[in-house]
Length: 268
Image (tube, rainbow, N blue to C red):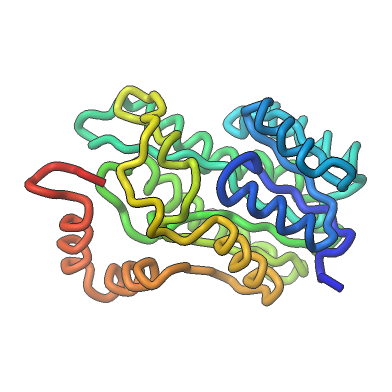
């Protein structure tokens, strides 16, 4: 029997990518799952796909505090409690800082960082009572700033530091806090990434076929939760980037620059 059988697992941003893969995986583990997203049609399709299973869906924008409060309360009303919160909802950007509107960076921070803060704030009393788990889906960009993604990197650096503080505060509480940092993973995040004007770019500059699948990423996250790991860094390139940035930061600057630029132009 799975360690998550009959547990209530809350996953933000569950209509696409890693979030959707996590919803499917935890339902298969016998968990009761609640998820939210902004897109009502995708949530409806997800609910229809898993008809008859213990899945609660609710439309919410995690950058809006009242939406987060209502989502957590809706989960409690539907499923009774909360054992696990996986803060997955996120948005990226692709624009040079010199060209990006400040509002673009603010929006990324509100979704990726404040959305996690809001949901965790309202879910925490129940997670504490159940000695459950809090997971933040961060990124390699939370260890190494990436060109064209300054706001995204800032939000993930903030998330990593916040999770570290929270983990330390809860050290004797029995609550597990995991920082999960996927590398490039197939998902909708690059399609929805904000451009310099704060609009979805609607395309991906990356080779999606060469990336880890969302389903495989979800399996790694599940394993890290089962083993109560502190931090999960995925993919060889992700581990190498974190290592080089820690011990050889000037070299990391050059390698990251070469990866994202071609002939002086940002291409990825």
